[in-house]
Length: 128
Image 1 (tube, rainbow, N blue to C red):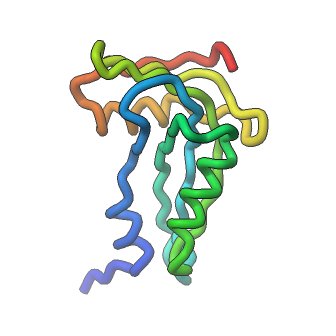
Image 2: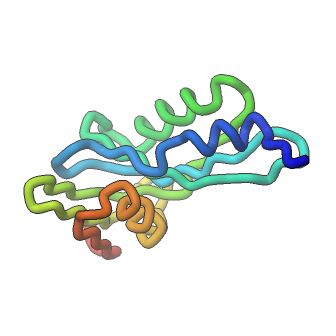
Image 3: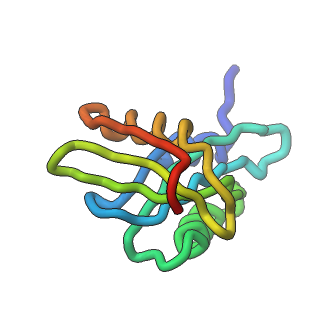
């Protein structure tokens, strides 16, 4: 019998990418882990919003929400910026976070391509 942990079930329902509908804004790449014994599952998620003055603002809000039930634990594995041009259907990922370092933009780009399959999604390590 295959039983899924509560944490694994919660992780399966977390959107892989959630970003503002357009503009240039900071983003973070967050690794979500299970806190349940014997469950080593994890998932990387992308969050990017224009309201955030700092990368940590996004991480703090998202991790607080995900960790509230006690099944999940979050760690920020880096950040950067996203330029989202909804009219042109283009997303460009670049830069880094002063506090968290540079996210692996290749992972971020992969997550965004799943969320926006009809977009051109690119990345580079230039800029701040």
